Length: 315
Ligand SMILES: Nc1ncnc2c1ncn2[C@@H]1O[C@H](COP(=O)(O)OP(=O)(O)OP(=O)(O)O)[C@@H](O)[C@H]1O
Picture 1 (cartoon, rainbow, N blue to C red):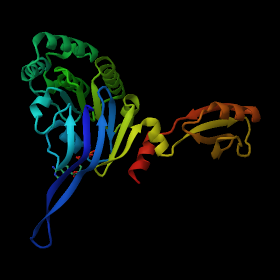
Picture 2: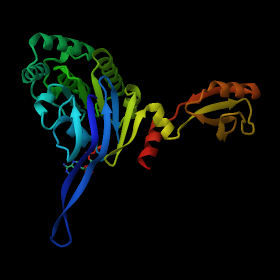
Picture 3: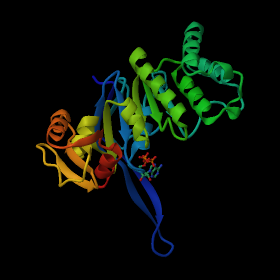
């Protein structure tokens, strides 16, 4: 049994629309369609897709907020919409765009309320709180009301709140949205530690592909409600036909470089751009170029994941 099992999942919404004249009609929106995937305990999975692809609808079904129209769905062996309370003890949810903390209360009181709601024994609560406050550098802010926290501080507070009851799974919806580069880095580091040290399973939706590159070994790409890719980042690059680039600065301008395994894509004065397969080694290509040409400098550009994803979305 997988920790998360999704099979042939469907969710449609009936939307009222104005018909011709004053007539009211209805229209079916298929938010999630024929969706299947499984997530094992301890995985860190990026769940990505363009706006309106069905990501939030999926997360809402996984947390039990929304009932699927049809299909099979189990989280931690439970049917989410039927066992919402029981499931709530095993999952944590963090939304980048809204807080689950009490706006006017100091962080300390929010955490205490959550302890009572989830019935976490006091010693476990104290241990978890101490550890997370230190890891997320929040100790000095415990008595600050949430409304006075910066976005980055509030986000870290939300993450602590989602973890105090030791969930097996943490769903994160755009966790780094609006954060500066340092805060993003710190948050990613924390999530990696959480996954490695506690084995917490992470399912992350984000439009920031650097989150994915920094955190996720596996990516599920969803479009029009269905998975169009499920695999690792290297596979995603292969699927998108992406290439790596060797940038060669020659001492003098020259005709296009000719070496096995690489093709010249662009020439500007003495600089030439050669592309080669993502899964090929750069070493023999670099050696062949250096052996036959007068080279001033060399560098390698990795494929841009944004290009790969854009290509997948537009198919
Ligand atoms: N309650 C609802 N009633 C009607 N249609 C809905 C409802 N919720 C979502 N939809 C529709 O379902 C589709 C999927 O929406 P969803 O919010 O799951 O996408 P998303 O991938 O999370 O998008 P975004 O990246 O913009 O958050 C969209 O066409 C949306 O308009």
